[in-house]
Length: 357
Image (tube, rainbow, N blue to C red):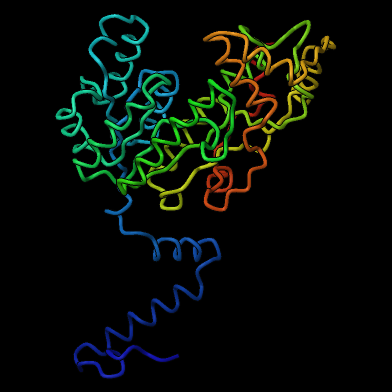
């Protein structure tokens, strides 16, 4: 073994102590148990502590359907968490007012305002490292205002636009759902054009929208007597519980592997066709459901002949259960959440359905 230059040619009064220190290090490495050796390697090659400090996160739309889960996940992960909240939200909506009170108890820094006040938005963004947009469907296009504020602020190291559905660059849908997807693609291109670091969360089908009701129109619970199966029922669908969407989102915040990537959230146990889902449910309730298969041409006819909002819901359902949203999508430019974060104990579709027993 070659000694370092300073040991080959040491100063006389340092020679003894240098050799002793070297021998001690060699002895410790040689006789350290395997587990401890791995730990030594981990810490010796780790990023400096200052670099792994928790990012400060701003959630826009934090009182919305998914936003509240993202705020909670951010707090749970010990990120300094900020939420942009409109005054009207607090004064006119009792349930959201109660949610804001919970945010306060959890230590979330509440900032009053909205995305229409550019000057204030820039000021807010300058206080954080990461911006997560969880705005609802009607505000998707308005995210250009968030992009402009991020660009001016100049300090944001990651932006998560409001996606939380299929991978928009690979999803296809009939109108009016098609325009909704196109709007999200437009926001992607705007983010990229401005050179803003990003992560796109493709969480596929949120459980509360489709797993809870099997895609049955106007239903909020799984069917007990009969079930309408769109198309042949064999298209694979990815279901993700809301807490899990938020958990994976926050996991990605400080992960360099997700920088400028699509994070595909596809829990392996939750990739099921509607037919498979029905069989699973029938076993749980001990009953065989009456199955009514709805041909695709009939679904398309319904979309074309119905008015808003029914046509929107049916066009979404068609894209989920008939066309499919990429359960088997091979995206070399993306990364897989289940592979990056195997430690996450996600809610399986089976466990989710147990809530309705």
